[in-house]
Image (cartoon, rainbow, N blue to C red; front, top):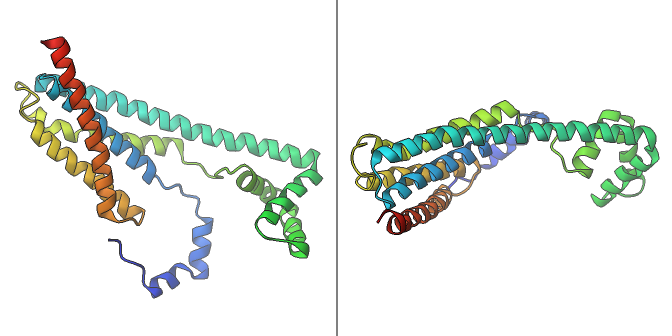
Length: 251
């Protein structure tokens, strides 16, 4: 269980300086990129080892397939995350230009949009008009308001390179774990080291979940078991497919 913050800790988090720092912080949290890469790396690589074991392939074949997967799929995933982050930045820039053009050409219509946005937040009467006046006096604040409140965009998307590197490192680190037992016995069948592979990978899944639980203030046991169950489901499917292919093709 995550401890509940004490009253003094909550007060410290809500001082004027702490609030200002929190609201002005623009650093993206790369936890999601790390978790995504780690889980996908462990799941897909373990699925390959499980499939090789189910099909009765040698450990050497499992290592070759696994390493190829870690490098190729890890890079592919990092590239996809990079492109997504780049697209997020380009979307913000594009929408910023559009909103600037709207403010230039139809300022009254844009003011009405601001008015309706804050009316929906509960402002009304003279106070509502004051809010509209303050926001529309500052052109950049006006544009930012339209981007966040009208379009639902994040003003500071993740840095593309950092997002890609975080995903790649997590994928490779977690993805190599299922390969450790089979690397020590490349001449044997993948089935012989499969129990050790399953145990190590289960621990990895659970550790990823615990880390996620701590970072998101969730129950670490529930988060760990949730991640473990997801990995186990992928392993069962892969092992079953490997076993079916062995019967249908290799025999």
